[in-house]
Amino acid sequence: MLSDRQFERTRQLALSLAGIELLERHRELLERRSQRLGILADAIDALLSAAEKGETSATQQFLCLLTTKVTGFFRHPHHFEVAAEHALHAARQRGVARLWSAAAATGEEPWSLAMALVEVFQRDDPPASILATDVSAEALAVARRGKYVEATLQALEPARRGRFLSGNRIGPALRRLVEFRPLNLADVAWPVEGPLDVIFCRNVLMYFEAGNRYAVLERMASLLAPGGLLLLDPTEHLGRAGHWFTPGVDGVYSRRRVASIPQRRGMREGAVTHR
Image (cartoon, rainbow, N blue to C red; front, top):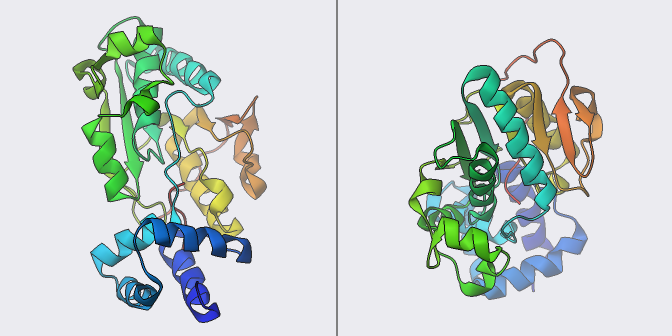
């Protein structure tokens, strides 16, 4: 059981490291995750102290405690169809399409996006690239490995599984399209260059403090080409950042064709992270 003092330290650290706003209702969830990760009650203070000092392993463990990695292949299938069609149009205009999965978790989202690109472009080597990032080194390791258990793969249609996987592993055609990098959206610098044609940022914004949400969306808008797509979970919203985007259907937004947004060097303290 987290004491009031431990929970308050956790709240402050979550905001400063990851831009995540924890409320009282999250206390029980954190306690369950701590038990699942094997972090005993008497070890919480040591973990918090190490993370507050910036120790890498403790920071990663703390971020694992904060973030969920619930994902799957082709969640909201319409998103992948819309994104791939937009990428096809962008490639016809500029020769190549660039896409970003900003909270890739264990990789199902970017691999699904790669499948959709191959299908829509009707070639195994579409002129497109996918950057997949996540704050969790543990999740990225799973994503890079591209090996999934049967329960996860059941979401794939048999035809797709036969075409794109070798047994339970992602095949080489998809691997050529996706690059994985670690990225915490709270960091001052992002290893991401624009212009981008599509950004997936689903099940992320709902955890952000309002100011951090605005700052992240401002930076994403600056990276998107005019008319580029931002895809959110249908339950999420843009808040005060809506003036940069034209809303579509079911969490699909397009970057307004307005004057460019200045690229910031950084964000407000404590900006964003993963799911």
